[in-house]
Image 1 (cartoon, rainbow, N blue to C red):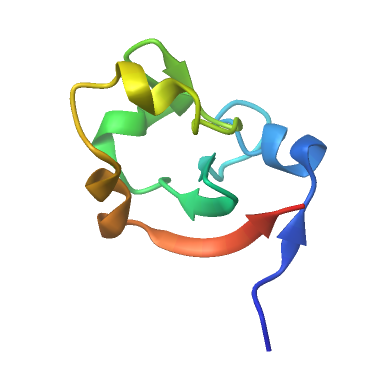
Image 2 (spheres, helix red, strand yellow):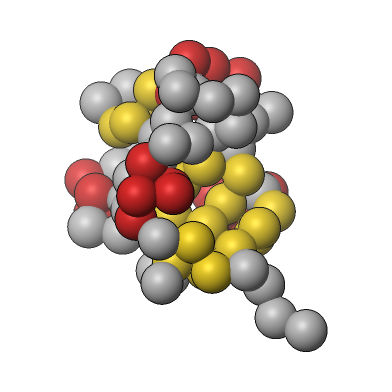
Length: 77
């Protein structure tokens, strides 16, 4: 059985403000970053949770390997 699919609107609600969950998407996968101290309150530097960060990663000082430490909890559909 595959991972659940979430809409952009469902992802947007997991922004650390509207609900307790803090999620971000990257390349179609949704990651739970709730436990990361770097995403406290749904913000990580100039990036906001509840969004697809695929385009924004090019400006980040790290590679996509940063997502390896987080659990994929769904796919963006």
